[in-house]
Image 1 (cartoon, one colour):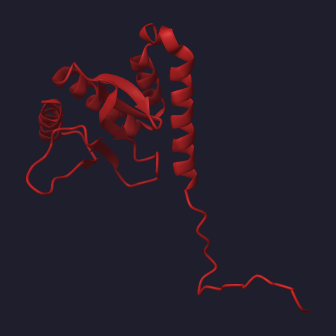
Image 2: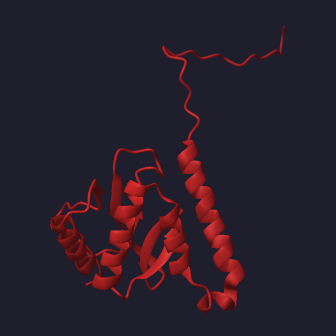
Length: 158
């Protein structure tokens, strides 16, 4: 028995295991890796590529409720901040300035959440004191919601 080691076993009150990333998170990371590979392959052809058509295709794949929201967000961003370039980011429609994502739309279905999300990165100029929101839940597109999204997007790129 001298020199023999055995691994200690741990038990928990539940049988649940934490495997790290969820299936949805792993899928998003794979999509991001594919986006980066595609961009690298394009290289000098990047100017000829049409990232907006990729964004529109991704929106078209969404379930109807998310698709309606994403189409309106896309139109509002294009109208309110034409300097933002559409692109895919972790498999989500996103809008970038100088190659850096400023805002993005995340469908509710993407991570099996109860609402879609309009999110903003640290590149967005939304600073307001010591604390401010960077993501907004979207459940329906009302005139008030459209106006607020337009304001946020314009402020984000100011």
